[in-house]
Length: 383
Image (cartoon, rainbow, N blue to C red; front, side, top):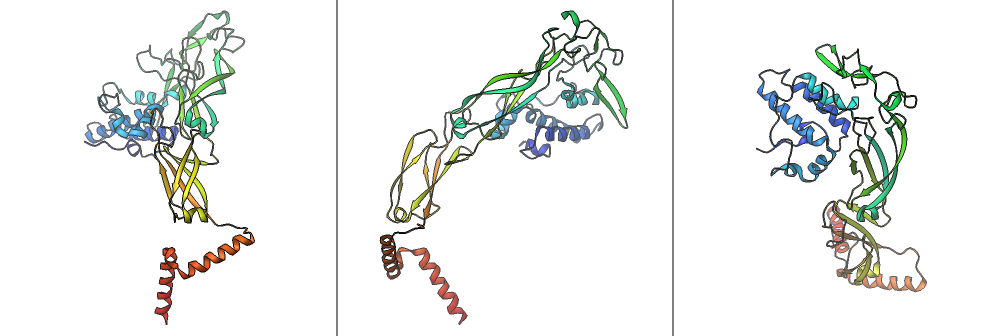
């Protein structure tokens, strides 16, 4: 059976942000969760679709693969989330679905089976970089600086004086790291405000980090930009985000790429468009022109006699590089016949002579001849 489009399943546009996808998922997950629809097979099937869609779209790499190849990206044992269906025996109740939806708000992404608490994970950070079209074509290495949090050196990430983590069980959450509160129909689960979700309260906080286990720091990183990236591409560097202190794992760094416009080339997917001006004489008589190529080489294009403004000529495999592929797109040369604005006396004489000849022999301008013939018919019909 054909699968529904994942974006349509979540009622989101294809350019929806991660936050928009998350909001749509929360709404639909709560609407169709089996706990709220006991015995409703249709709601159960819808819940499976919503989870399958979100499992793909919340992951940057899976989302990029889906945007490029659709469902085929996860077929043939490719590990797509829908390969084995969604097991409700592992879904738990509404508390678990809230844990999935709100977990990253509390600085963690761990699942069950970790002693009642999720493993500590540092926050994700974002860095923006701007590259030119040539760097996007060839790929490059870019040095970036990012504000982040690293483990405190004074306490070695423990948050305690003496470099040994001395803590007591949090009395607010009883060591669970989370608390629940009834809000109308729903039982809302959130990180414990006392211990920050760790389940423990530090006895003697470090004087440098004040028990946070991490301190603010600017880091310098080198990012490898792959050939073929597009404007708006996001690159995920796993483990390069904020630290979470001793025993925790770092978050991720997301690099958002902006490609500056080029003075000559205009990119359209894997293809490149280059607009080239032609003199009237070149377009009328034909000839050969030389054009630049994005890889730094040059190519010759044959211009047939009588070429009209706006016509395009295709150069195969002279276009843009394709991400994670050796293939290249095509280059399209679009000509624009340019009318001279300042004529010498001799040029004016030649143009007047040309106009006189063109008036006598209009067969050389079929479009103009056809237009004025229709104009004559129009006025003849009025008389």
